[in-house]
Structures are given as C-alpha cells and as structure tokens.
Image (cartoon, rainbow, N blue to C red):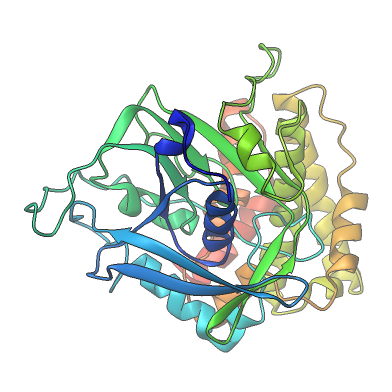
Length: 364
C-alpha cells in the first residue's frame, strides 16, 4: 500500500453509499494509500466488510465511519435509502442482479434521479457529529437518493466529487458551484454473496469530465488520479469520455426498463420479436437526441445494445430486480434524462415516454 505522505494522500475520501460498487471503490482507494471514511447516520464506529476478488481471494475491508449532520428528509443509513438499498441487496431479486455502473459491461447495473432537492439540515452537537469540511467525496448511493443523502453535508466550495452512479444528472444542482465533478463509468461488476461482496469482474473503468459539444477538451486528470490508477485495475482517463458514458446510458435505457416491465432476463429482449422491435425504436430515439446534442455522436447504438443483451443473456438487470423487490427504480436518471434533453431540443421520444410512464405507474 502506498504511504500517505503527500498532500494528495493526506486528504481523505468520504464515501456516500457503501454498497457493492462503493465498497469496491473504497478498496481501490485504500490500496492506493488514501484514507476512506464512510458517511453513515447510525452509530456504527467501523464498517467491516469482505470483498471476494475474481480469483477467489477474500479481502477484509475496514472503514472508519463518521456521522454527518442530520437530514430533515431521508437519513443515510438506518431507516432510509441506504438501508433500503442494503436490505434489498439481500433479497432474492437483488441478489441475482449484479451491481455495476455500466450496462455495457459483461454484467449489468442500474441508475436514476428524480427526487426534489432536500432542505439543508441542522447540525448536531459535537458528541454525535464531527465538524469536518469534506473536500473529497465518492457518491455511490442509488441515484434517486442523491438529494437526501447529500442534504446537510459540509462540502467545501471547491470539493472534488466522484459520481459512481448510473444514469445522468443525479447531482445537478446539488453541489457547490465551484465543485469539480468527476464522472465514473465502470464495466466491473460486484454482487452480494451472503455476507460478502463478490467481485465478479474487474473490467475497464473510465473517469472524466464531459466537455460540452463544440467546447474545449475535457480537463486533464487531477493529481490524485495517477497514484489511484496504479492500484485500480484498468482505470482510464479517456479523451472520448462523453461518448463512453452515453454508450452506457443507451444500453441502460433499452435493457433495464424492458426487462423490468416484462420481468425477463436480458437475453430475452432480442429473442422476442415484439420486444426486439421496441428495443430498436428505443435505440433509434436515443441516437436521435444524442446526435442533436453532439453531431460527432456515431449513432447506430442498436448493435452494441444487442451484443450487451446477448453477453448478459441470463442476467437480471438492476431495474428488473428493483421492480421485483418493489423498490424505487432509476428510470428518471436513465430514460428520464433522455426525455429532459429531448424536451429542451423540441424533440419527441414516444417510446421512451411510454416506458417511463409504465414504470412509474407500477412504482410511483
């Protein structure tokens, strides 16, 4: 492990969402010599978990916990969204789903937003809350819970925030104006295995800051990226990050809601002529709005979506698992994001609009 001797290593990372992918990120950060502190709203002093690596080796993971200011809406852990996510991961539907942030991986994931912004929370006494300005934060909670989870957190004006979530837009309006948001797209996959978290695959992970179409190139990686990349397998800072993130989004937008609504495994989509036709329309509509946003978008997303569905044929998508468990879905951050972009551009996406309405009709 790298010795935390430099200023970059002296600044800790705070973890918001200690689920499958959040724990994997914490593991890599610790391997690189960074201190990781889990934010929880219960009295847990230390979080102890076990990761099982792809080669079968168990790795104990220990995180110091800190209790942030209380939220007036949903707490981070206990009776709130983080606990709901942890409990749902132990139910049969969620246990069959692999938690990844990239549906373009060999094993699928989830993603979403949709809550109104939470009100600032009152600060607790020093006996229960540590008064610390958070300069580095990993947001790995489920996207719909972002506003509630971030409520009251003492983020520095220039904080660096890693968004390890599915979908897009879940942190819009929730961070300080001067914060640096680094998006994370990972093809790695982790699933719950009893009391442990099994790393099913350590695949490519991309970090970046999406540049506006026609604008300047995305920023160079920050100083902490180099040390982290030496300990996070296949971690990249690509020039074409925006397109990689959008490819993930299209895969999610086609596979997740169709498998959730029809309660089928991923591979069934292109085995059923009716679902295959719907998938084609969804991909075509997504390409239309993404091309309008960025004329360099290559389009023709359907072959990639088909390849993904076939590569993960027997898997349960995260949205299907959520719907089986009666949990909130991430439809707003996936298909909902596409609809919001289309509305701003004056475009109509009827297939996506129908899917969003159908999913919300079952799980408002």
